[in-house]
Amino acid sequence: MQNVTRAARDDGQRARLAAVGSEAASLVGWLSWDMGDHGSARTWYGSAIRAARSAAEPLLAAYQVGSLAQFEAHAGNASQALNLAGRARKVLGAERPAVADAWLSSVEALAHAAGGDQRSADQALTRSLAAAETLPVAPPPWPWVFPFGPQKVAAVRVTCGARLGLADWVLSADTEALGGGHEKQRALVVLDLAAGHLAAGRIEAAFALAGRAVETGLRYRSGRILDRARAVRRSLALTSLPKVVREFDERLHDVYL
Image 1 (cartoon, rainbow, N blue to C red):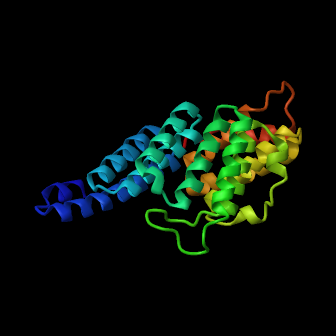
Image 2 (image 1 turned 90 degrees about the vertical axis):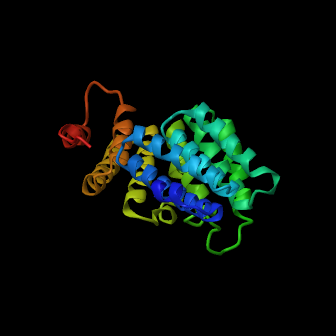
């Protein structure tokens, strides 16, 4: 696609092809992230940003920068994620659509949670929810692919609570409402719930849930799910391990995703 774009003779056609290339690169970045290949994910998200700039599409460029910010927040790089989210806002300027505000605020919440800042994460979630509640019930505007609404903010709150070790943020959520979407996305939510149970001292419940998520990760060969499962396991430090934890360790022992 990059070669076809470079070969285009007309500036308008070249810009349109660059926008398509940006979306394709973003998809490859997401797939790399799902495989647990963070180096390739960063490379392809960077390609998506450069292509969006070549397309002269500020909304697309901001979306791609925000997508990289979201990735870095999940990777635990709080400062970088916040800087990228700020760049995305600058690209859009004051005329940004409400969905951009809602989404970028949720990304900022994830970044604050990655940095251990509960107060700032809560404030960002409040801003995100306020913006999300004003959005019309309609297909999301391009380049957003999935609708963003209060349910998405609730899911982000659960993820933030899991990162911050706040059982009340996680376990007070409407888990049935969070159970939509693809099975891989549900597995990530289940791992956040497992982290919440672990923070509340419910080890058996935590690793029963985490074990279910691992099976989904293995079935879909999702490195992201398995990396998150390992992170949940690392958060438990005991010398005498319950049977459910030993079985969890044995299940992951020979996994190389």
